[in-house]
Length: 182
Image (cartoon, rainbow, N blue to C red; front, side, top):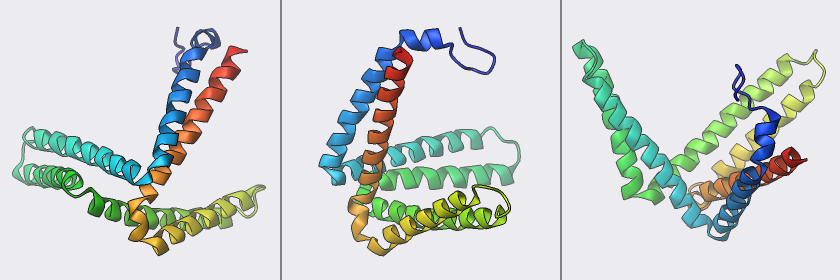
């Protein structure tokens, strides 16, 4: 039974604890495979993003023919074509696409870090503001490290991020499943 807020009762989760652990173990195995070959993991990441862009582009194009005015049709069609072409480009040249995505990742980390630093400084009167500031500094430094290694690191950095994410998600699900079992 699902509650109004979409939360599962603990008895329902307890009955499925093995599924959480099993999925966690599967994600851990995938993370070790990704750590074993970061280049392949990077290409897989690029193909994943390319597939999402291709699907998004097709949805944009379908939607373009459902709007009423010409200026909206042109806008939606152009957006759809750009997404579709970017998705196709990711499949045609995943190495160049990984370089573009890595540079975008570096810029995004730097901007997000600067914004966190700004928020942390604005919260100076609140307790714990230093943690937000620290998190922003770490994020900026991560972005700078990625940017300094670009474009060479674009052959492995996306794969590394994927492997790390799979690893932590796997352990999280294993820990959650075992905790729910108790």
